[in-house]
Length: 360
Ligand SMILES: C[S@@+](CC[C@H](N)C(=O)[O-])C[C@H]1O[C@@H](n2cnc3c(N)ncnc32)[C@H](O)[C@@H]1O
Image (cartoon, rainbow, N blue to C red; front, side, top):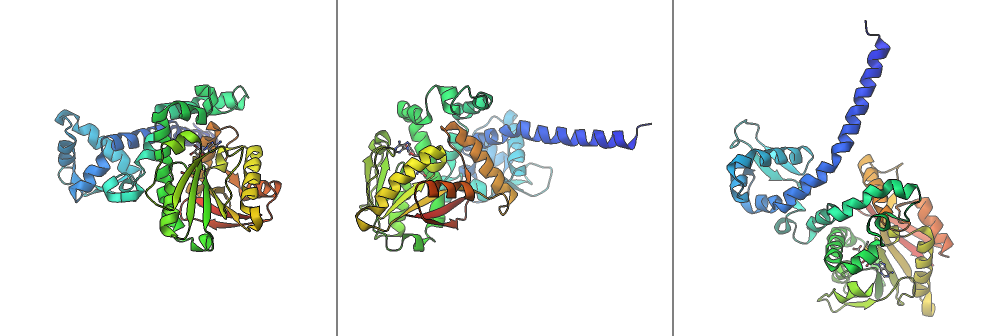
């Protein structure tokens, strides 16, 4: 007879197996998402004007009928994880329809307008980007300084400079994320009150600068980034201009410096160097300026589990960069104090990022 203890032990092992399998196969989530994006399914559903049946979807996709069950299985899985919704319970393919959810609306350019996250999906699922994470063990053993140098032999910034197509993919992905932040920035008028000039350090193609200048027309924004990124960027707004440079050398003077998704790319040592240069910029000529940071703030105690999980995944992702990491409030405060700042204020945004004002 099997004892109760043996049964409990077996139950625990099966639960462990289930958890392991859930995570081992989790890489098929982004792969399935990428497939839906490449097949243009979110756009097809939006253009259809109403939830779409499988036969209509298959016909629009021009998929051979023999393959329609693959589309059905892909949609069933993506609906199960919340990317699409399935309406109707019938067994017949004509009785069920597929609809967009808030997540897949963000993958249709026509539906989401400025907030389309398709470039982010394409960057995160790119084979080269994904290949970096095979080096985690080497990073932990100290055999490589960071994931990108382990996998590509160069830092991510050097790789992007050498490969213009990747640089565009990266910059478009960053810009699509910035468009989301614009939804929250518009509500942050107190942050931009009284500011006439901002330097958006590492501002990429200028998407955030454009959003700020549109929302706050009295602000002039200078986008500061490495020369090859600046050379390929432009913006129609008269209040946005560009300059190439290196954050470790000098940063133009302004009332405020914006650092959006910058400091999480760098080690504490490099962040302190960057922050000291920013402090000089906003305190010159008697200015009483500030640094505006938009980045992740890990708060395991108060955040919902899903938000923390995403922040911790991003922390692993930052291992692609030399010393890059996501930080808790205590870790942020340490950087501010070491760089000579006196005070800071945190504004949680709607997304998983926070805005932190730092005062010299
Ligand atoms: C993670 S991206 C963030 C882009 C943008 N702030 C955003 O949130 O969309 C980091 C940016 O820092 C820039 N960058 C990297 N090293 C730099 C350096 N040494 N000097 C100036 N910019 C740099 C990159 O080219 C890139 O545009």
